[in-house]
Image (cartoon, rainbow, N blue to C red; front, side):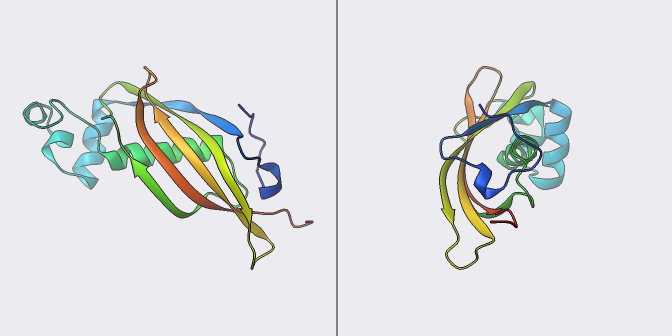
Length: 152
């Protein structure tokens, strides 16, 4: 795993390079708060009602998991100019539950210099969000814009 420098430019990245984030605890309070505002469905907002749903208990919204993943990704892969998305695919193979401790492993899968704009390139990042038991809770494959150094 690479130790991330202060800011990463296109030239700093290598296909196959991986980064590991810190962790984030998904408490019941956080799950309920996020869901009540952004995804108000009983399996995300009501622990008792959630028992009678597909999830058989309170589950974090997938969008909450995505938001936490993004935070951890930004903290662990400090791309110069920010992580500017150019499309992604997300899957949620396992529900996130209260008490889960999430972390993200991100691997660079592809790099391509822009053909029309010499100041940038694109990276394809595969981010795997794991819980404390190493169970995969989310996978994301994202295409992001990455700036080149000005002196290149």
